[in-house]
Length: 635
Image (cartoon, one colour):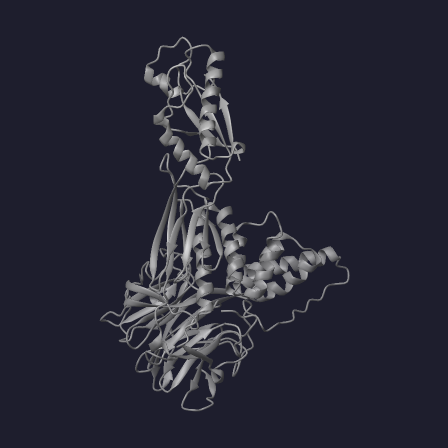
């Protein structure tokens, strides 16, 4: 979600005897304090002023982070570009820059920056490469929306502020908004610069429904919502932010989010009671959702022991009416990124939003089959349900239609509520993935940082990424396409490329490469008769393979190196090894290799591979080890 369109003017009176440097120092100190207290809107105002007067990496980075935290992706993109202009900037800023680019629909540039992050931070290369691959997936989905699904802005519910996460409540819809209609206070969130989020009710029996805040038992002074109601409408579970006031500064400190429950008593909502999942406030629990029968409560939390970021948890209602200990919904649902806004439709199908599963940008909507901590068949709801921005807070009227929340471009306000239909005709989006690996043939070790080229033979488009720390890589492919994939890295001898094709059904294919580093490569079975340099027939097979290698790799020049054992004089061995190397060159020229690509070099007995020097008794096998012909790539 993003909250940034309302600009508050901060007035600051500086005493006349303050020097400009003192004023700058006070502004920076104040901005940093706002930053530490999560009052990002106020921090932005000051950092923007400071960076115009005295630019620097620390201020640039904190300003960029502020825009990221309030989800102003357009400003975040510009701010992180400025951060990366400083050579000493932390490489993680490439990821944040790429995240903003992707959410702004700049998929190609996002991909480039994810790969830069992968190269600079090898321990994160696996995740970064997956993010780069996801850019191809996002671009493909963005360009191919489901034409059976229709979305329209639900204008009567929306304002210039944020409006999201509608739920059914009797003949009404209840949703979250930071509009200040009917507010008895004028408290402003330092995080967003807007009023605190509240729960509002709209009676949909009216064509243009009146919109009113729920009672103060539900809406306290700070953030409240989203919510979910019991099927009889007599109970409500909702998120609330507990905020402690700093008495010294009279500022607001943002605390943890909790889930509260309120029951209706004689038609009025009773005092809200906190649920037992987070009474000490050491982490957050939020976004409650109920199963169709009301027996299971789902919510999002960053409690310890999860997979990373916000995870989705479940709790079952016990016979005594209490809720069981929360259970993580498992790795099928949760990833190292955020999974939030769970929802269950009347048929029991599970929905949620995620930044960690392969998606289009920010939060994407996904469906899953299952319950509690047992789920299967994660499906991206695709475009137009999803966009490069945040898509979340879905409500189904039936299997075909409902409401969805989004901060996509073209809305009436910040986050808007959209009406959708046509989900009955939604087909799963086919996914085409190429998994691969790069391994050194000589020792079986994985090769990290190997450059892989994927060439689309139909469109001519090229994609490049690097293998991760375990030597693996992954590309997203398009349907009905032909590809060429190869290791395009100057550290290794070029090897045959692989050809991949896709159809119209989802597929996962493999392309595994064995590579040899460009070093001295021994030619097997190149033997010579005693005191001779002419090639024997049993050498031809190996030399024909070398000829094929040179024909396939026309840009490579090599040097043929011959060696002898230590028996005989050093001068004679030097002469003999040169003649033997030249015999290999002559044979390759006869096969059609250009002489300009070949060089013969004899090393005699100067580069022995073992102890068998003059005066040392060795077996014939040990002497044979030193009588060898190698080549190395010179260009």
